[in-house]
Image (cartoon, rainbow, N blue to C red; front, side):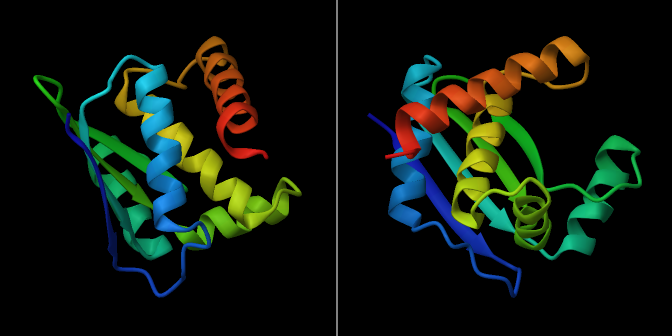
Length: 142
């Protein structure tokens, strides 16, 4: 069975979550969402680079913590998660969360996107947040 999560660093800011712990978390979420075979690349970028991607691909000139792209779905789900460690750290402070927990939430969030969940409408955001909370409690908060 193919379960690959690779990390690529183009940001000067460290990811505080251990890569093996992140792989295990993503694997559990993918299995739970019915996608047991996957290849996911996680690319950490500087905040401004992720903002430029948001403008280019979504026509939104905003800062964001993550952008998800599903590349292929069959036979193996292939996707990419582009993250801004700087923005994730700011959000941890803003939402009074540990930095490590906020990174875990963002990895879960991106994984849900790769599996077809969205967060455009209020109803979708509520469903996504409920999934994030469930997976954090089930697989991360120990």
